[in-house]
Image (tube, rainbow, N blue to C red):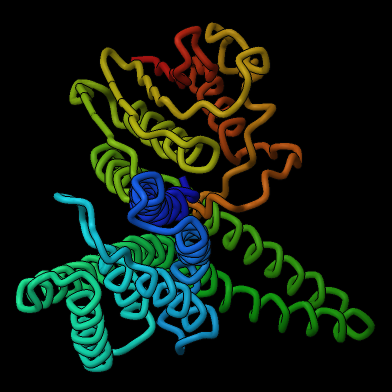
Length: 413
């Protein structure tokens, strides 16, 4: 899903490229028609076609140069302006009835220049080009000057606004995607800081006391063996208490609320561009079963965000059975295992990367390298499968014949 902003950029750029290409083909057809009817000498027609093709060929490069940022006017922009002027200079003196005038070429170049200039500079340049091109067209073709001027002015204003709006649309898409990534990274960082702070609060004092008592016991070992043994017993007691406190903290950290997790998953998937449909009926499940399903929802959604390009994801919970389906399968079907494997043998996990708990809070970077490091117990889908097996449930994850990927987790009610 990380490629979607770039896909939007390509669509916007290619749409403009195709539009200019169609305009060029139309004008080339006019050149052929003028040359065939004798209204335009063949050498002049060839020159006009050459200038037109050169301008059309440079248009995509000049356009892309100013699409991501607003640079200073470049040599490419100036050269493309010369080609546009050359095309306009070869305008036939006897235009074919009911065909658009070639003066539109000047408007296309002004719309390109608008991407490089400030609004005030663009307005000044557009006014100058419109007046000069309209006057030239009037002198060469005999068209009424007011009509040509009004037509050129309207076309120039419309094309400039459209071109700048087209680029603004791409900037908005890009900034929205960047903000979602930033929010996801911030959520991960905040969760890590919170957990680090909790561990510091739990272990800071205990470890400091253990260090002091261990040092005291080492000094007393040569002088008073009894006191040294008592101090080491105290160290052992403190270490046991610290271990208990850490275990309680981690258990609390791992306790998830199913409803809250469903809401987080929906927000994360929709922020990543996937439509998420949820149908959950789990009010009758015991707390332990709801926590297991919450873990399954989190890990399943993380798997969708990291390893697929899903545009639709459905999450259903009924009778203690969770099913997560998505249409973003990227692995060949022959690399998946049947969806009937029990949790202890969830072989579909072989291709899944380990997922840290904190990373599941938001969409991961889609351009992250797909490493194949072995999954570690207690993390990712393999850890979820182990957890489900220990609790007496079942787990499977595989591609279905219809092309969807199905993650299924069942808990003991």
